[in-house]
Length: 165
Ligand SMILES: O=c1[nH]c(NC[C@H](O)[C@H](O)[C@H](O)CO)c([N+](=O)[O-])c(=O)[nH]1
Image 1 (tube, protein in one colour):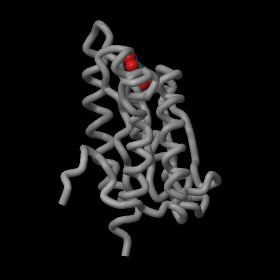
Image 2 (image 1 turned 90 degrees about the horizontal axis):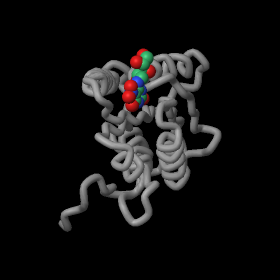
Image 3 (image 1 turned 30 degrees about the vertical axis):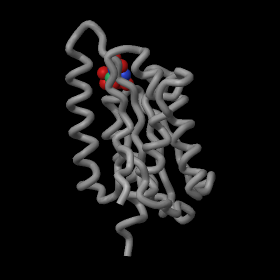
């Protein structure tokens, strides 16, 4: 079997019956907007209906775990449960340790949410040492890297469908 590149899908998954939430931070707006657009683009490509993509924002990446949990609970109460959530944030190192603490806390909290909520919670947080690194991973630097938001959209559809019986 050909060795696929990192993160490539092993097959195409059908998102047509999925409801997917995107919860994004509002720090680093230009980068966030591009990442969210990339995730939505991929979700639509994989068949998720536009009316089943629910987008909400929170102040910053530190609020992504609790904001994602509240978003899932809100949709449960509405009788329209989400099948996956893509928390999206961009953390860029400053001159203090603030970056490290938020990255660590947010990463661990998002990982735990998968097991607590029992739906895929995708890790859509860029943890970058410079604006340039973040822009490249949001697909904003021509000829550099692809938009990582697309990877996260693909991961959400795969994880919300492949293990279903
Ligand atoms: O999403 C981010 N939040 C950031 N801070 C805000 C934090 O996520 C919380 O919103 C805030 O601390 C209030 O809880 C960032 N920095 O501080 O650099 C950052 O780069 N990205």
